[in-house]
Image (cartoon, rainbow, N blue to C red):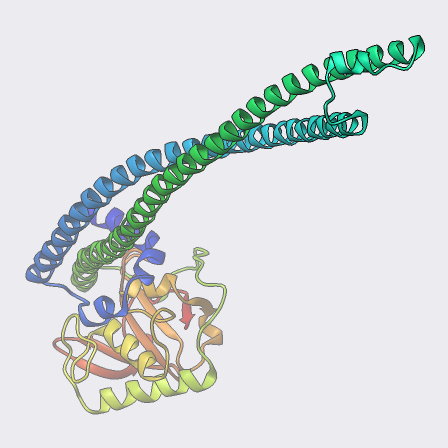
Amino acid sequence: MKNRLTVAALIGALIFTGSTGELALAKTPKPTKAQIDAAKAAEAAKQSAANQAASKLSAAQGTLRQLTAVANAAQVKYAKAQADLKVAIQQAQAAASHAALTAAAVAEQNRQIGRMAQNAYIMGSGFTDIESLLHANGPQDLIDRLNTLDQLGASNSTALKRYQAAMVVAKAAQIEADRTKAAQAVATDKVAATKKIADDAKAVQQKEVSRLLAIENQLMAELAKARSIRLTLEQQLQLAQLEEANAAIATTTKYQAKIWPDRGFKGRSTTRSTDAIRAAAVAFAKVQVLARYPYVWGAQGPKSFDCSGLVYAAYKSAGLGYPNWSRLNAALYFVDTKRVPLSQLIPGDLLFYSFDGSVQNIHHITIYAGNGMMWEANSKSKGLLYSNIYSIQGLMPSGGRV
C-alpha cells in the first residue's frame, strides 16, 4: 500500500519530473546511491556559496543604506544652500539698487553744489553774506539778496548732509552685498562638493550591490538546479525501484485480466509526434530488437535497453528531445501520452501493462508495430522481442500516442 501511494504521488508529480534537465533524465534512469550522495554534496556546496554571497550582499546593502542617508542629508543641505544663495542674491540686488539710488542722490547734490558755485560766480567772485548786503541796490534788492542767501545756505547745508549720508550708506550697502553674495557662493560650492562626494560614493556602492546581487542570483539559480538534480535523481530511483518491484509482483500475480476494463483514465490532450516521427521510432525499435541487444534494467542504449528505455531511445532518435520528450517510467508515460482506444492503434503508439488495472501499478511499456504485434524490451530472461500484444497479461484498455 505504501509503495502504491508513493507511486501515485510520483505520477501526480509528472509535470515536475518532465521539467527537469535532460542530462539527469536521460543519463541516470536508475541513479546509484553514490550519484545521489554526489548530488547532495553539490547542492550543499551551492548552498554554502549562496549563503556567503547573501552575507556579502547584506553587508553591502547596509553600507549602501548608510551612504544613501549621507547623500540624502547632503541633498538637503545643498537645497538649503541654494535657497540661502537665492535669498542672498536677492538681498545683494536690493542693496545694489539702494546703492544706485544713494549714488543718484549724491550726484544730484553734486549738481546742486555746482549750481550754487555757479550762482556765486555770477553774483561776484567775492561773494559773502556781508558783501551781498553792502552791494544791494535799494530795499527790494536787499530783500531779494537776503532771501537768496537764506536759500543757498539751507540748500548748501542739506546737500552736504545728504551727500555725506548717501556716500556712507552706498558704500556699506555695496560692501554687504558683495560680502553676502561671495560668502554664500563659497558655502554653496562646498556643499555641492560634499553632495557630489556622497553621490559618487553612493553610486559606487550601488554598483557593488548590483554586482553582488547578480552573483547571488546566479548562485541561487545554480542551487535551484543542483537541488532539482538531487530531487530528480532521488525521484527517478524511487520510480525505477517501484517499476522494478511492480514487474516482479506482476510475475506472481494470479488472475490478471487479458485486457483491463476502461476506468476512464485521462492523459494528454495533445500529441507531439507526427506520422514520420512515429514511423522513425518504430524503425529504430525494430533495429534494436533484430540486433538482439540485451535487456538491462535502467538502460536506454546504445546497446542495451529496458522497456521504457527502448521507448525513450526510439522517439529521441526520431527527433523528439527535451523538454517535449523526457526519460520517464512506464506509469508516467501512460499519463504523459494521449489516450487511444486499442481499436484505433497505429504503429508507434505505446501499449501499457498493469498487474491490477491501475495506473500506478503499470509495470511494462511497448511500441505498437501494427497487425497486433509490438516491439518490446521484455525482461532479462527473454531480452528484446517482436511479440503479440496479448502475449503479456494485464493490457491497459487504451494505448498512448506520443
